Amino acid sequence: MSEGVRAEVQRSDWDQWWRTAVIYQVYPRSFSDSNNDGLGDVKGIIKRLDYLKKLGVEAIWMSPHYPSPQADAGYDVADYFNVNPEYGTLEEFDELIAEAHARGIKLIIDVVPNHSSDQMDLFQEALAAGPNSPERDMYMFRYSENGTPNNWGSMFGGPAWSEVEPLTGKEEDRGWWYLHLFAPEQPDFNWENPAVHEFFKSYFRFWLDRGIDGFRVDVAHGLVKAEGLPDDDIGPDRWAGGQQADQVESPFWDQPGVHEIYREWRKVLDEYGRDRMLVAEAWLTPEREARYVREDEMSQLFNFTYLKANWNADRVRDAINLPIEANGVVGAPVTWVMSNHDVVRATTRYGYEPEVATDRGIGFDDPQPDRELGLRRAKAMAVFTAGLPGSMYVWQGEELGLPEVTDLPDESRQDPTWLRTGNKIRGRDGCRVPIPWEAKAPNFGFGTGAPWLPQPEYWAEFAADVQEDDPSSTLNLYRKLLNTRAELGTASGSVEWLDAGDERVLLIKNGDVRLVLNMSNKPVEIAEVSEVVVSSCALEVQGGSVEVPANCGAWLK
Ligand code: NOJ
Image (tube, rainbow, N blue to C red):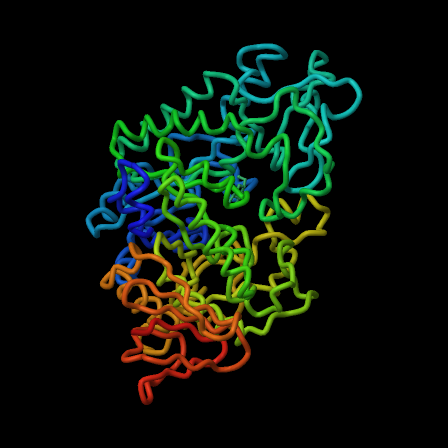
């Protein structure tokens, strides 16, 4: 954030760690399996903390770790106050917090407030209690004799409503429905009910008391629905394909009432300190997103515009400028996100032409990416991205240059999108395949039990151990990058655009470093260079200038 903006906006959190941190996303199921049951676990994460420290990670964001029937890989929470027994115990979780903190690494967990699992006691009690009971008022039950109460569609395909009577077998439930913006196993909470607010306040205190540093807020723009639940003008099928689909005006997204909720949560977090953070998952436009990061609401929000820009210079430029401008007004930092567990991995997306849509996932019978080109571009993009001011998210395996598994056997797929669209939309399993740690060990060192999603044979070349001692590996590039980022303090700098003579070459001055990303198809000459600080390809200063090839990114002095 530039000093100019800083001087104009009064906020009490200008010096907080989350403004500049490198935050590494761990997907517990797929990270590291210590008890060899094919699923990652808490002890597995503890085992890898030194690896993360060496990488230069300042915080971990962990996808849901709670008991869950796993209808949506843990985003269907059955108990908000415990750890999934498949992943470990609460005691082990406390150990994780302590071990992370001992290494100076913060821990952010995922809060899932839009919906719970249908197996959660609150939903089961609601079903048992019958129509119009206080228990039912915790969720979104509606009566409608002729079909679904409105035309809303689930993000995973099919209607967003399911009938109650088949679940309870009770006559009195005939004509009653419950809302689920996601799978039927994920009933939506009723945020009009103060008891729901109280429930989540107690949730926050429980984890803050254990030492948690922050929360990633799932579907942050979806909690409040428009009064009367009016039809939308899209209908059920528009939404199938996941939340990365472009969002539009909708009676269930971005309703003004959501902001009251975040103000309430911020007050709870403030009891523990301004260093406790909230990061929003809200797929909106930069202007609308900025409202979530006002001083009395959340700390950060994922910059998905950046993720969605793919390998397109104009879109990347906008994804830098628009959020900086919008967030600047409220004094919030911008985050830089290339990937996460809901989208096709960056190395694979960059291996296609930028206009190729990958939202539906990729299968063996789809056009395949240029893997080598994708990796070159992903490294270039990572170098450029890490030099931008703000906080940076790294999706597990990104530092290994892992590609999407585009030939995952369809019978192994577990994403509800695949299952609920009648196998039409493949969904997100291809980016969630367990991490390869050791090239020669069974299951590449993930654990000796068969991993919950199969790893492809060619992953040996990406294993962390073969990259360890190779100075030109993606892993060592990330290490150098993140550690240099910390040394030079670029994350608290500012963006000043320079002209590189070609619109497809991005050139930014941040303090005394120039960041260049050559997205064109020919080399570009950058003058007045004395040093290449870090680069994704081999570069040489000759006669005070540097020739940066296509698909290369660098920091220059
Ligand atoms: C967003 C999460 O990132 C995604 O994985 C999940 O399926 C939905 N929210 C529903 O919780």
